[in-house]
Length: 193
Figure 1: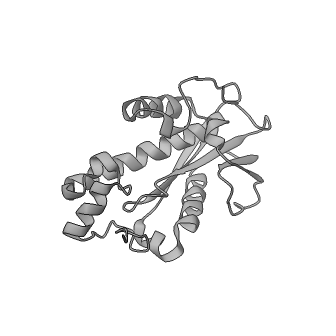
Figure 2: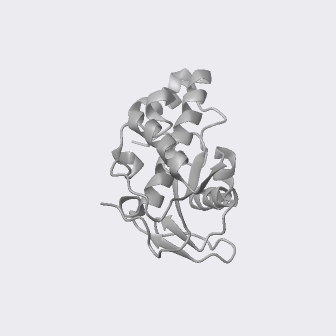
Figure 3: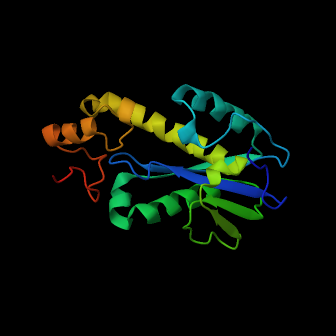
């Protein structure tokens, strides 16, 4: 079972979605949940079905004390690299929170200090703390919605199903049709065999 709090203070959990994709933005969310929050359905977004994530996103947003979403587009990812873009997206998400935060819980092992707010990097934090798992769900749903919209413009890449990740079908479509302005040119878009 996930934990509701790391410190008992005003904590924001942070996570990102889309770091390993070949196309689309990287999206991060920051979520502050009540210290007594409990919902056994909430866990790492990758362990939840597509449909259930959309339901849980509403539960989280209704329950949250506050939340924010940050987006960094693929051109900036190509310019500053994916790690820097992921951290920037988290900073942008935290910027949108109106409450004073005592502590940031960051999924993963890399982060750059946000103002003067202390932070803890927690590997697989989305399997340990509700706030990080909630952030993973909000970020994933937000990014999935972006990719569903982009799929309508570029259906040959099947982004409605692969969400821009490096499936064989996606790579084959890149070989056949080239790339779009939504592809990350700094990534290995076509595997070398």
